[in-house]
Image (cartoon, rainbow, N blue to C red; front, side, top):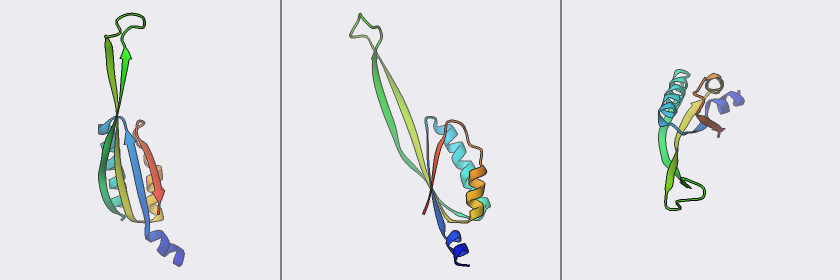
Length: 109
């Protein structure tokens, strides 16, 4: 009996990151719909700061030191808290098919 009460008051924190914000938001919608369908309360999503990594590269190897190209890589992050998560919620989130470019980390509290 006490085990069921701790499972119902379980809290999940989901960290998501991707290079493309569109597939990240699509995956986020799937997670929120799944959590609400199983009866859990959703807090968020929280948009975390975008990490921008910039790289400068010479255009040619031996000549024209002044000629350079600049590239940047953007990493988008989202945070969602799921309150009152049952074992059914965790099970449904585990079965969920998300896009290939999305990294998901689920922590239980």
